Every structure is written in structure tokens, then in C-alpha cells.
Length: 266
Image (cartoon, rainbow, N blue to C red):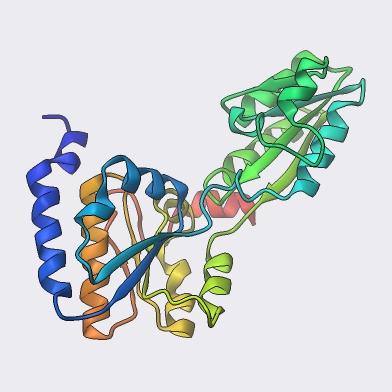
């Protein structure tokens, strides 16, 4: 059994489902929101909603940063891609996202110089290799990718590049969670907080949310056993009338987060 398989063990997951049902029986109803698209995918992939008792409801929140990128940003990126001296560089997930009238995929088919990379440093390398072209990297993401893009800007500066640019559209996770929590029409009894984002910003970032809105928060991993244990921890808090931040994903996330990455963004 691999390390990953331990968190997909059927008996473990079903055992957690029984514990959730026992805790929630006669209580609730409880509505918990996962705010990360990867959590949403895991919940659907492993059928975890089907394991929830009647008292527990899982709903999806903001999702992935690409999906919530405004048309205005995409239209600016498309306009840049039409300039003859510009090379637009992006992660692959942005190519099919439609703007008001087109997409990067369509513009590339029409002859636009649009490149797909797996790292922002690849974009820096393209700028090195193409000194007469303006290389524009599309910086879209949450706190997870922001440090790597900041690192590419610092690297470009060290190399003395004057043709490397970033069109930034980064989002932060605690702020939209606070907006959701303040909505009187939305009833959320707890959050499954994002894993990778929290590895950067740290679990302490959610304390103001708990203190202001009295909503439990559990930083949770992406494997089925992680998600089920995160739900169990939320149910325990909800039943006890508590609202605190807990870390289920302790093998990756700390309270302080990645301080080196945070310093890079400061």
C-alpha cells in the first residue's frame, strides 16, 4: 500500500462516515462549504456526498481562480495577444476560458503568439530567448501560485530583463469567505478551508473569520479520508457550538504558513 492509498482506504472512509452520522444524529441541519475547486472534484470523484447523513449538507464555494476570472481581465489578455510585438504566456487552464468575444485558444489559432508553460520561470526563459519580444505572463491564481510568479519577477530583475511582464489577476481566499459569511441569505455552518492556499498563508489567516462570524473552519486535505475527517471535525464543532480554526491537513499545513513565500510577496 502506498502512502497515498492510506488516505483512500475504503474502510477508513466508511468508518468516518459512520462517526459523522453518529455525531449529527438528531442535530443540525448543518451546511458546510468547501471553497476550493480541488475539494469539489474530490467530493464528486469519490462520491462523498452520498456518504453524508441527512443532517449534513455539503455545498461548493468560489472554486478555482480561473473560473472566477472576470471578463475584463481576459479581454485585456486577448488584446495584448493581438499586438505583433507581444508573446502571451500562460498556464494551459486559461486557454479555453472565453472572454467577451474570443479566447486565447481562438487567438492562437488565428496566429497569435500564445505559449503554454508549466512554470513562471519557463516564461522568464522565453523572455531570455526572445529579447526583441515583450513576454507577458498571465498571473492568475490564489495565494498558492502568487509566490512562484513573484519569484519569476525577481528572477527577471536579477537577469536584467526589460521585456518580461506579468498581467496580474490574483485572488485571496479569506476575503471572499468573509463576504460569503456576511451574506444574511447564505447559511454556512462551517468551512472546509483550502489545503494548498493554507500551506502558503497558514491556518492563522482564518482566525478573524471565526472571530467575526462565529463559523468553524477546518483546513482539510484532498484525499477522501482527509475530506471525511474534515467534515467530522466541523460536525464536532457545530454540535458543541464552537467556532475555531483547526488543521486536519497537518502533514502539510502549519499555523504560520510558508514564511519565505509570504516574505517574497511582501
